[in-house]
Image 1 (cartoon, rainbow, N blue to C red):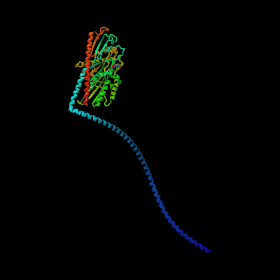
Image 2: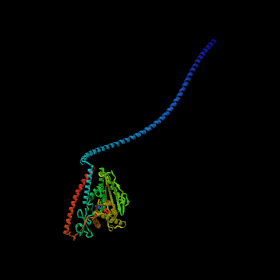
Image 3: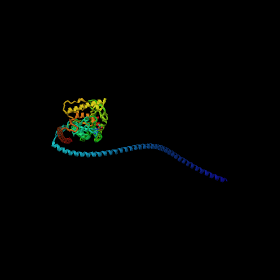
Image 4: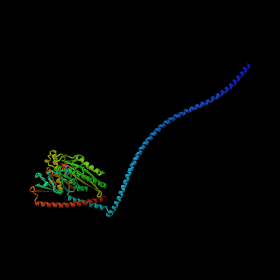
Amino acid sequence: MRQQAQKQNKNINFLEYTANDELVELQEEEKIMKKYLGIQLSNLELLNKQILSEKCIKNDFVLKLQLLNQLIEQKYQQIHQLCLQIENAKSSKLKQIQIYKEIQIKYNQEYYNLNQFKMELIDSLKFLESDIQKYNQTEFFKELWDQQRQSILEFNEELLSLKGRIRVVCRIKPQPESTHKTIIVNDEYKVLLFDPHRSLQSPEKNQKKQYTEYTFMKVFEEDSQQVDLFNDLNFFLNSFFQCSNVSIFTYGPTGSGKTFTMFGEIKNQKQKGIIPRCLEQICQKVEEYEANGIFNEVTVSIIELYNDKIKDLIQNVNIQERKEPSQNKLPQGLQFKQKLQFLLQQIISATKNRIVRKTNCNQHSSRSHLVYTIKLKLFDKIQNKVNEGQLHLVDLAGSERIQLSQTTGEGQKETIFINQSLQALSAVLKSIKNNVIHIPYRNSLLTQYLRNSLNSNSKTMVILNISSHPVYYSQTKEALNLLCLKQQQYITRSQHQTPNSFEKSERNKELTQTNEQTSAKNKKQSILERKLTNIQSTQKTLIF
Ligand SMILES: Nc1ncnc2c1ncn2[C@@H]1O[C@H](COP(=O)(O)OP(=O)(O)OP(=O)(O)O)[C@@H](O)[C@H]1O
């Protein structure tokens, strides 16, 4: 037992010994492990530190990324704006390109036209060169120009002496067929006036006991048209285009058709009067000047003379006696139609400012004289000077008897003023016609206002408007007596008796003589007019 116990002790000791060894080994191992763990721990710490620092870096990085995102967003906005700007710039560029293309097309057209013009110029230059060789010096042109001008003036003078420096024509207002007319037209130059108080029978039946024959430079019958009157004064208009001073008047009793003759229905092709027709010609002429590069200036003024006052109808203000009314320039560079439209519109609004009254003789009687003035300035390249001409178109107030018109007060005062100024005008015209040295301009405001255009160097045309209605007999007679060239009374012995044979043959002789003289005059006149046109066309080719 003991042995067993010893054996067992020995075993235990051995076990103890091996256990101790093992313990030592384990302790060694533990130490190694602890050392290894310490290393791992410090590695872990290091790793932790690394992770922390990387976390910081990552946070930084995230912040930077956010900033970068914001920046990218801003940049994106900027790029978007830029894109819009580029888009706008692109479309305006496209527009510009389109404009440039159009300009280029125009330019090409202009270039082509200029080339054509150049070719034409080269042709005319060749033509001119041969002419210059012929005439050698510009002096020659000057001389030729002077000659042409002189001959135009001479022709004008000759024509004027034929037509009359003061041309007086007579126009009869149409009346209904049933009217007992006091006037019959004898021929192109004569009217017969019958006294309605002596016989009320129709003058056409030639049963009158007494009548007066009045001679004019031309008589326009009741069926005459506005264009006929205008054709008759066309010559005076040509004179104005040569820078002469011209005045055209409509004269006559109230209601006899003066305003109708002067203005007519402005926008009606057939019924338009002298003023719109003259304006048409003037606008055409201005267009011609502009096309040919001739410097020109056209101004118009419209005034009214009422009692002793002058009113500028365009501005609708009274002006002082010695002051000029507003000079309204015709705008340059407008088309023909626009120019005409401008002038006609001006007339329509200006004439609304004119004084008109209802009288016994006329529903819309003009109680003032209206003066429409056109001034023309032309620059003469060859003479190097400016030529000026004036055209006065005057619609006179109607002459009337105070008794007949039954006017009182202000109306009576204006009738007296009208009659006085008409008398003063006829006295001035008579003095010019008779070459009197002292011309009585001072007797009325009308003659004072027109004095620069009423003299022996200017041309005047008076259209006497009369009515054949018996009511106007005495006024018509007065007007005829005042303006006719010649008057003669004829008396038949009984109702059915014609003038005796001596009177008759004398009258016939006179008539044939006048007719011969007139046809000779007319022939000469048409030859001269043709020559004048030829000269004017030569003159044109000389200028250009
Ligand atoms: N030749 C004509 N053909 C057609 N109508 C005419 C003619 N002459 C005049 N008349 C008409 O007679 C009327 C009176 O004419 P207008 O006003 O022209 O007369 P006036 O002489 O100017 O009168 P006043 O001196 O009173 O102003 C108008 O209605 C006009 O249209």
